[in-house]
Length: 130
Image 1: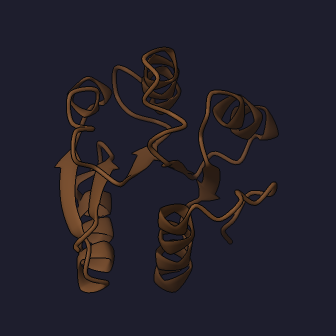
Image 2: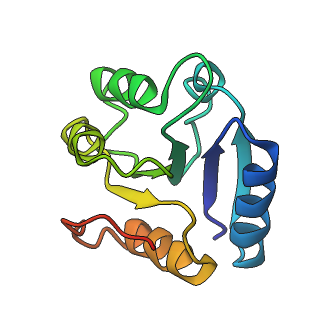
């Protein structure tokens, strides 16, 4: 069974990098470039990689909406961001985000975190990344 990933990022180059990384690991990847678009794309998705700093509706706004709608924690959400402010990761985790991953993240580490989310392994308490 091929697992389906939703990549939500407003930067086309980042979506391409994530699509190549995850696709190369055997995952099917669907993409959204806005938070508004992402809200409608969770059906049939196994894991979401959600950028924090989206234009318009932020990743935290999306996560809050999914939390209110009961999408999370049923659907594992991995927040990706270059913004390492501790208050943001605490907020994301409180809203049901599984992990807060720092960009750039090495490809194998990203694949390992996706595999852990799919297995339902306990979420690590710390931020993962470089």
